[in-house]
Length: 273
Image 1 (tube, helix red, strand yellow):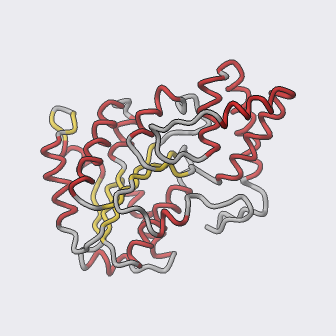
Image 2 (cartoon, helix red, strand yellow):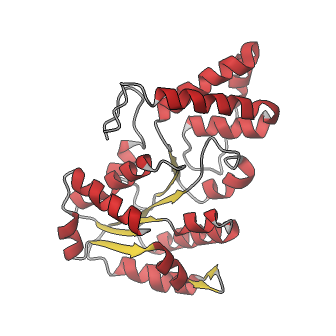
Image 3 (tube, helix red, strand yellow):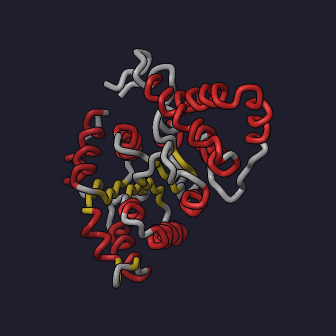
């Protein structure tokens, strides 16, 4: 996947050399190409650096990540043969760490901690989507509890972690009441698509819907800083601000932005091949 003038998917620096205890999250809707591209790069760069990899995902996603690592020039089969690249089923692993449907700390540390300890590498990169499954099943308290367990495990072991949720940033669920607990348990939110394209789409939509009021509202947006969060891309921050502070017009602006984004992302300057 090559990216034209509309920018990268996730900050390349974080995919190449992530913080030892960085905890990243990406939201994606029905189209998970951006997620596969980012996770594939995250895993590929880890292999190139001699790090160990652990992936806890559905079979479809596991296969997609392996193909992407190979497409980038890695040798996932060799890494799996020597134990440096380990793949686990999302649903089975989630069942192993739960008691009566609740993530259990002791089981989590035994199962997941044991997996990480057995990877033959000094540094590890992990990707998991158990939290995303819980969230999609409307078990949101359990999802946040599991995120907190991952964070506690990172205080005992040095590894970087990439999570994903099936959340549409243009959808009504992408608003502070729902998203704040997720953002507070991560260090970085990666863009769910082409970041600059999303920013351009939002700015165009705001101009069209707000008219003369747009400049004053942009100034208010810049003053809205959330120190409890990690790093959040500006377009996603704009959407959250609109949902929280301009509810009467948010749907109109965000709906128009979705239309613009769909058009921009299909321009020849962006080559999805």
